[in-house]
Amino acid sequence: MTSYAFTIGGEPIQFRGADDHFRADVDGVETWHPRAALTIWGDEERSALSIVRTEIPAPLPTVEVLCALIDAERDRRMAEDFAHDFGETLAFDDERTLLGPGQGQEIPAGLRLLQMQPDPDQRNWQALQGAALTAVVSGAPETVLPMRAEDNWNIQTTALQVLAVLSAMTAKGAELLFHGGALKSQQRAAYPVIIDRTAGWPS
Image (cartoon, rainbow, N blue to C red):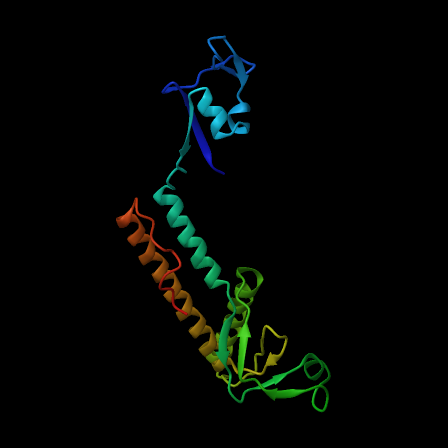
């Protein structure tokens, strides 16, 4: 919202007490007007009373606020779906998952999107990572631990595949984290110039 300052005769307008009126004499006659008139009147009416309206620039955001906006952009990108190509790894629909062989559909998974909202998605991936690590350490790396895609297909990933996918997720998150940190350093160095916080992010 645009803010304005008003002067009369080159001096800031003074308002009177609780009723918030100001004095602007007309033809030498003492005349009082409500504050609201300043925004209702047009330029011609204000000019007739020697009133000048000046736009007040919006205050410059602090560097802390600008860095917080960079953090928000980083978090938004971290929560975007993660794309991964599972190739020929089978994906089951829910009917096949629940009822077993011969039921529902199973297809090569190919490229799928995995949801990455902080809660519950990323928390669920962490739990799956723990299960996959346990399987590998226990000598059962081919244990099937399905990953559920954004479109509700259940990808029949092994424990090793789960770890590989989650490692790629972690790498992307690290890229976003470091780029966000670099942007904040640039913003602090450039202030009061405001840099483009959407520039250069890893795809």
